[in-house]
Image (cartoon, one colour):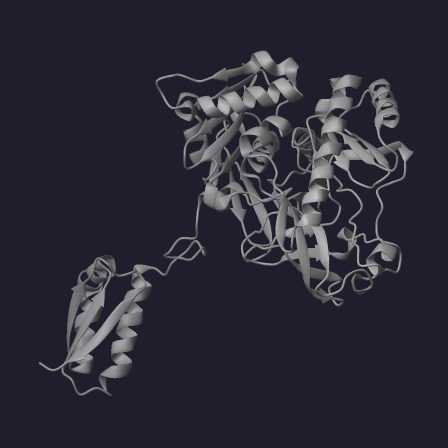
Length: 512
């Protein structure tokens, strides 16, 4: 199978893997305690308006207030004055563009500031466009969008958009004409990439469903008190079928009979042409083990990734950006140094594009390729990188190679990366990635004894330390320890304690 979507479900976790030619391309997971919130719609209450940041904090009932930037607010002034609030506009939806009919998605009027549109205590309908990450609350927008199989609905926005990935101009014109004839006045729709082969009937069915759904959301919001959830997006299994499955996906494999039945019903309703591609897994091995996914997940958490040629890349993520370093490693080439460097960089390009998508790394990304003297080689590297990220659903922007040989790029971030989801900071280094060496700790202890020795009358001192530190003091640094005893006139006893952190120790002064 060229491409398969695997759904592994248990009572405590649901995982979805997209596999292409045996390689894990994309991994999603949902745990009850860590469920994603993107696309959920809330009736919220404005807690603070910050003119200096042109933003507002909105209480939507979560642990932390959400962040709403001025460009994501579009309030009808007249209705606001009457105590009614409507949110207008459309999310940019990454790979789509306006075409021909309809106005472009509305934005705030020029000169309108956040304090002109929102007041503290005001109730407003918002949608989460970015999950809470770390200490930051959710990113909110008033540009509400409702996706279906082929279409994305933009309430109260007179606009038609078509995915840029649909390149056939004849198909674009046909779809645009169908949408224009079908849509109600003053409404907006974006045609998703999977809608390229949709019939007029498919588009009409999606449109009717979305209009009905929006009516229910409005009724729920009117009857709810802020803050409250008024619409929750589909669970991860159905959402993945809706968002990931394209005609290129040959099979959908589900290992849970109940979810298999739900996916089958969803396919029957929204994508009947895919009906024969849904299968229930009944193998002896667990689904992910059978496909080697568990091994791929562990590899996706490694800092160093080896290339087939013998080179390797290092991926290091900080709070502000991600740095990727390319090295020749064991690869020595055949003819000359420039060819060796170019081949290593070319192989690294494809691996980097793959790893960014698999690990869901977003934000600013700096790639340090091995220095190339040929300008043609540098241009080819960037061109290959741009081609390699075309399959990525997240919006990517790549700049040319800088004078320092670095490639700067950005990748849209809408949720935590894989490492943050599956891992937590090390309790020893607290995420720094390094701890003090055993010898450094030994010398800290010696300095502390030396400072206190002439202030304390007690003749004996007991040092409690991690066994590795204790062993170094008693063996490799035994001469230093004896010299310190002679210098201070104190008897020093070393007590190893397994439960102690390698950087922690206790110094206790005692009478003989």
